Image (cartoon, rainbow, N blue to C red; front, side, top):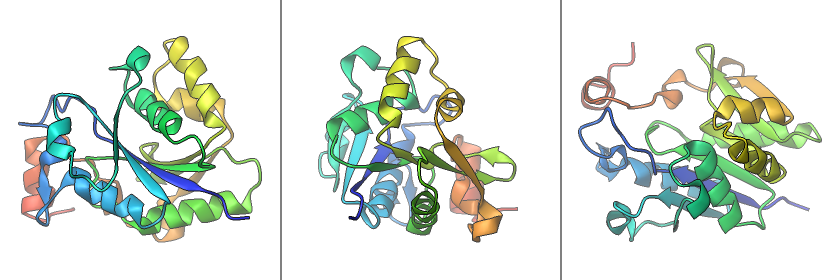
Length: 203
């Protein structure tokens, strides 16, 4: 029986190093958050867009289910966003997670990650590694991670690494699966936007 998959796009961060909220930066005539939603729609059954109240009006036409962080976990980072997405759609077996500031991510990434999960029973998370760095915000998580996230948040352990250490995580090298490093570029600053988006320079 095929597993049910949902997508979670994280767009609730503060964008403190960008001139405006990164979700509304543009790449190829679409907002960043639209790229993320479009990517996950191709490989999941539905997509949840985790936003904030102050920007949600600009996302009301998104092709996704628009939600906010659970009230008790608001402002507690990506773990809170992932949990909120999981709680909002509790029927899926797996969740593909991507943050809205990775505009070069392609469905191919998640197809590869799901393939790895299918081959290894008991897997709870599959996380790519690119240029020596774990990429937990472009990864997949099993529904069994939910209880672990709750415990971590209640214990004020909010880092993604805390989750990866708490569950059965498989790390996959991007190069071994022919996944271009460009897919894992985060746009955090105006300088990075100019380099990668406007000039298309990846060296």
